Image 1 (tube, rainbow over the protein chains, first blue to last red):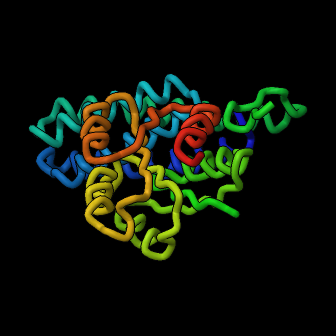
Image 2 (cartoon, each protein chain N blue to C red):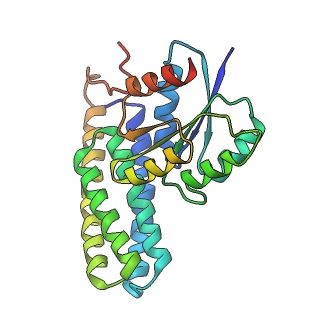
Amino acid sequence: MHPHLLPVFLIEAEFCLDALDQALERLRISTGDLPAWQKAVRAAHTIKGNAAMMGLVAITDSAFAAELHAEAGSVGGGQQPANDLAGCAAELRRLVDLLVAEASAARRMPASAGVNAFTDHS
Amino acid sequence: MKKKVLVVDDSLLLHRMYELALRSYRRFVLEPLFAVNGLEALDRLAEHPDTSLVLLDVNMPAMTGLECLERLRAEPALCEIPVVLQSTEDQLSDIQRGLSAGARGYLTKPFSPAQLHQLLDSILS
């Protein structure tokens, strides 16, 4: 993974996870809050696309599941999609935190030979 | 002479990735321009009507890629600018709509710099 891209991914992922948390907070008050569902769809979609471009399969899959639950909620509301979305958000948070920890550990190691396809033009 | 390429995506990571890939393209010198949604893209194109290509994400807030494409095609000064759509795999129906609306091609995320360069070869040559 390219060292210049990972920090950008993590900053944007953090922003989107915060947006997901805010949406979930509002959905705890009312699962009929359509703007909250839409905010969750938007945040999950951005994480999904970014993770896919970075080749982060587990995060892509969890974000895709979150997006589907949020879309289901935006159509019909209901407690089940909200619960499912909360589960996906927790898993996404765990995966991103794991990535942050791995990145921190990598910074303490000598430079790796691994290069993301986006900068490997040899 | 530089060719201007407008990247329209609400993801800052995608902006950075496109910038790296466009600057590494060897056939032409490319000048990347950026917008975060369809509305901003229309403003950028009004400022830069000599843009050679628009890389347009389908799913964006404020104005979607498809809405932006329709607005572009209705604008005489901008309607000839080639547009390439980009989206994730689960939005292929949107891609079909976009191609019907006049998009010249599409990129499915994730894509590699080589795939982008291949597409640039076919459109900018």
